[in-house]
Structure formats: C-alpha cells, structure tokens
Image 1 (cartoon, rainbow, N blue to C red):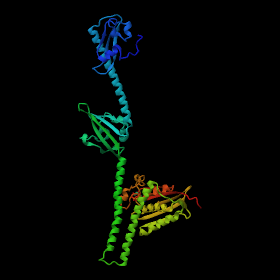
Image 2: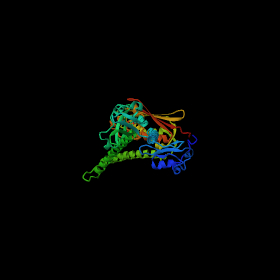
Image 3: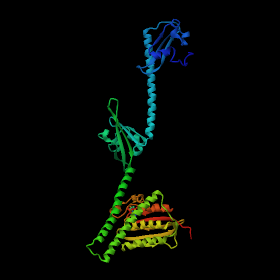
Image 4: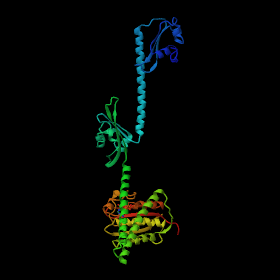
Length: 444
Ligand code: ADP
C-alpha cells in the first residue's frame, strides 16, 4: 500500500502507453519483458500486471486502472475483459459525478441570475403548468411563487398571457390586475424546444411599465391641452386682427377699441401660459432666479384679489383678512404668481360663484395664508395628485375649465424654492382650502 497516492505520470511507463493506445497493456513477467517494465517502480517487486484505460464509450480518459501480481503469471482473456469493463464502469460513474456537479453549479448560477434579474421570468411546461416564477415575477404581479407554481397562468393572474403565435409575437404590452389596480406589463415570450424540436414549454419575461405608460399618457394629454389652450387665444387674436384689416368696413373708434382690447387680453393669456411653462422648465432645471426680501403679505394678496375682482363681474365675493404688518421672507413677484394661481383656481372651480376668502396669520414660527372657496371641492382620492405636473382633475375637465394642469405644480415649486410649503384641506362639496406657509421675515 505504500504507493497509493503517489502520482504515476500518465505520460510515461505503462499508464502512458495505455493512455496513448486506449487499449489494455499486459505484462506476464516483468523480467522477461524489461522494455515494458521500464520506468514502472511497482514492477521491480511485482512481476505481472494488466493495465486498462478508464474510459466510457470512447469518451474522456479518466485514468488507468492497473492490477498487479507478485509472481509472473499469464492473464486470461476473461480477466482482461472484466478489468476493461470495470474501468469503463468507473469512468462512467466519474462522468456522471462530474456532470451532476456541473449541473448543480449551473443551476445555482441560473438561480442566482433569476433571483436578481430585473425582469419577471415565468416558465410553463408543455401542459401549461407554471414551473418557474422568479422573485421579480412575485414583486410585479403580487402573486407569491408558492401560489403560482404548479398552476396555470390564467389561474395565477386571472388572465392568459400566452400568444397564439409566440414566435412572431415580439414585445407586447398587456395589463393585469394587482391589488385591485390595473398595471401594465411589457412582455416577451419564447418557446422552449428539445433537440428534436418538440415543445417543452414556454418562457415569459416581463417588466412593469405602468409608470412609463402613465407618463406617456400625461405627456400626450398635455400636448393636447396646451395646443388647445394656445389655439383658443390665437384664434381670437387672428380673428380680431383680420377683421380690423378689412378695408370694406369702416369701424368706429369704439369698435376698434373693443377689438384691440380683446387682442391685448388674449395676448396676455398667451403670455401667461408660456410663462407658466417657462417657470416649470426653470423649476426643473433649478435655474429659477429669486430675490427674497421682506414682503408685506397683505399688499401682495390684495393686489392679486383686486386684479381678479375686476374681471369676475361680481360673480364672486372676495374677502381679504390679513393683518397689516404681517411680513414674510419671499420673492414678491414669485409670491404674486403663487396667489395668482390659487385665486384663479378658487374662481375657476367655483363656477356657481360664492365667496373666496384669503386669511393670513402669524403662527409660532411662520406666516400662514389660507385661500378658501365654496366651489366643487376636491375628491379625497385626488388630493395627492393635484400638485403633480400637468395633472388636471376630472371635475375641472368636466366643467370645461381652461387650464394646463401646471398651476399647482408651479405654486408648490415656487414656494419650496422660497422655503415655504402649500397643501390642501378639502372636503367634497364644501369647497377647498389651500394653505400656504412661509418663513417669517426677520426684518422689522
Ligand atoms: P389646472 O387648473 O390648469 O387644471 P392646477 O395645477 O392649477 O391646474 O390644478 C390641478 C387640478 O387641481 C385642477 O385640474 C383641479 O382638478 C384641482 N383644483 C385645483 N384647485 C382647485 C380648487 N380650488 N377647487 C377644486 N379643485 C381644484
């Protein structure tokens, strides 16, 4: 047993010969065949040997299996055959072990990939039963793997996602329900086949594109709204200008003044829309220039209210209740813009008129101004969204009010830039109250 574990070089001696020929080498008496025994340490003490290759079905050579005898002896054909068979079996066992090891490693690797991949991956077998449902599939669909595995996709997702012609389907968008909400998936699909081409199952990969879809929707809504909002004043400006240009009609001074008045006010509306959009761009680029100074809140608020009161023909009653001397640290022009949007909304969203109230007060460490109306109010579910860019509430749209959905976004952005805040207190059918909070000015 002293040679067990020593490394025989397979390039030399008997093993080398076996390795090269892949055939058994037989030594009946080492002393009678010194050229065979050369370089073979065991054949100094031992006299006879059979060495066979360890290889299965002509595959890789795993080694050489050698059997020795102390005294010289002939080797029977059946003994050699048995050894050859043993070598082949040992080799097959080793191949299997290696294969198993490789498969286990590969499985571990693909498990790690599937668990960390950003796509939901789902595989179904030939019968359509789910055999794979990775962590992202759980996250996206809200269905845990324990519930999905072994079932059909229709059962797990309440809808079929497979296509009739998966090979041509390409990337598709489909919707599913998660927690009562519709979410959109971008889905690709592939058919798995074995080497003979028989279908083994299908594999689906998908991403949650609900957010992107919502943004796309918002963008196209916005383009539609803005084009409409710009088109309306442009059309009247064009109409009045064309009318004034007519040489066949002699307009009196009064008519001219009226037409020019419309052209001026419609141009103003255009400028305001474009200014709002510019402010949005500046807020997002962070290039908004601010001149913060002590600001007399009552003056700003009264100016805004006066301007609107002149245009409403008495449909709304305005109440300003702001103590004199209440000063906030703010940019006066930007603060005017904020109240412009809030008062504009208060009027727009109370189409049956009513009272618009602005109250100001000093709190422990800030200035608080509330803008209240008696209008349509804001549905509870809408409150988190109304400050979003381009968001327009359905009531606004239903009431066919003008707007681009950026007013509150601009108001919140401007206030944030001035270290202030704005939020809404509203109940359905009892009007809305927007609360603005600003830092107190330290200047006396
Ligand atoms: P716009 O008025 O152009 O739609 P805003 O950003 O100013 O855009 O307002 C967003 C949405 O918030 C409006 O479409 C409307 O649904 C809602 N909203 C804003 N102010 C009020 C208010 N005073 N009363 C009721 N709803 C309001």
